[in-house]
Image 1 (cartoon, rainbow, N blue to C red):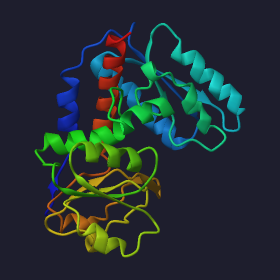
Image 2: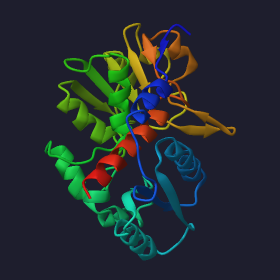
Image 3: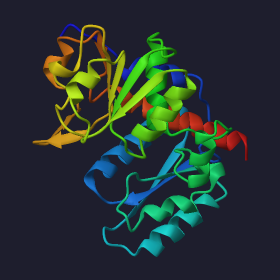
Image 4: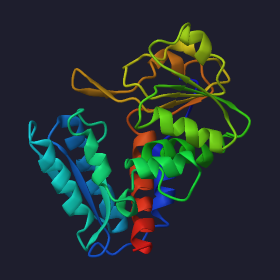
Length: 269
């Protein structure tokens, strides 16, 4: 491996050092379905919350529950006196997706309510989604310049790709968003100064997608034969300048940014 490894732990620890909380007043409620990936993620949130004194309560709904039950659950969580933030599983099946409308903006620490998204789009005050924010914080932590650089994002999802494009534009980057229908995807990716892959396709980004000047950020997560794998293939690490690993890259920073948002939410109550 010739690439500089952009580990998320030092960046996350730097964020945690600035956070101090009272778990009786600053709780995070998560709401989602009982699928394995979500269970793994919310389990990690419980452990991370202990680092900064934030109590995490996970509300898990059974697969096939009536969508209205989820909507009511989200609404109740948002008005709970000890709740600073509510985290809704993303992405959700189509029938449950309107649950985002029930996350009050003041508790919307992951920016899923359409009103929160509109504020981000317009550059107004409000929370920014944790994972795209983590990508930017990781780059900043390692001193990687964003302004003026060409950022190529592979993935156009609402959770990462689209918001990250808006946030990169706000940092004065030139942004190209790619997807599965992009013609000559490897050639487009090779033009990137910063390449972010967020499509959950294990090993998609091979050495053909990068150059020795590429900084590659892996936001993808897939489970292959019981193992967590990212979008960046091992041979790409032999070529690019720097890269974040999976696991241990963007993930730890995402959790830290989420708790930072909870602290901000609690201060504005």
